[in-house]
Image 1 (cartoon, rainbow, N blue to C red):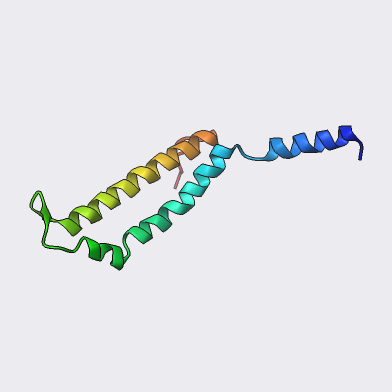
Image 2: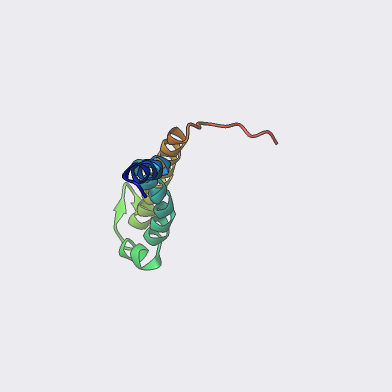
Length: 95
């Protein structure tokens, strides 16, 4: 191969690859449900199963709802960022 053809193939390979930020967002979208499962594992929940209360609610209930809300917020943020990178946005589906 000539140096010019090597340069062209190298440019083509880099232009076909996704930007690093898109791949990081996809990795985050893959890791988020796994992290959610890990945060709701019984050994971790057992750490919060105590007689303590926060604003009158048991600590374990506060933990479950805080983690649940954080997962929803992070999933929404990831979905919006991925939609921006793919030029999408909200697409209505006709049923």
